[in-house]
Length: 119
Image (cartoon, rainbow, N blue to C red; front, top):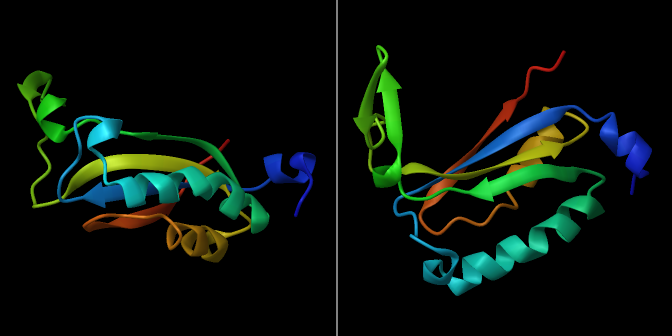
């Protein structure tokens, strides 16, 4: 495993988590998915990467979208799935970040991995 100093120099990637349904609370989350998420930091650290930050999001119905400077209740994103959470990870490259993305547990959805533009 890389030292903490080396890990801080790693490029950052955002892993977006999409789900069909987003629970209203942690208690409403599937226990198997929640338990798998609790094990993630150690599993990711074993690969030489690290989680910089990450959070679950509340359901899209609780969002406020802004388009053309007009606030609108809910998400403007179309489709059966919605953004449920995210991680920012430090990984050696995009392939490494995708490998980490494959570790992310989802109930009924997928993850998307994107490089973060950094100064």
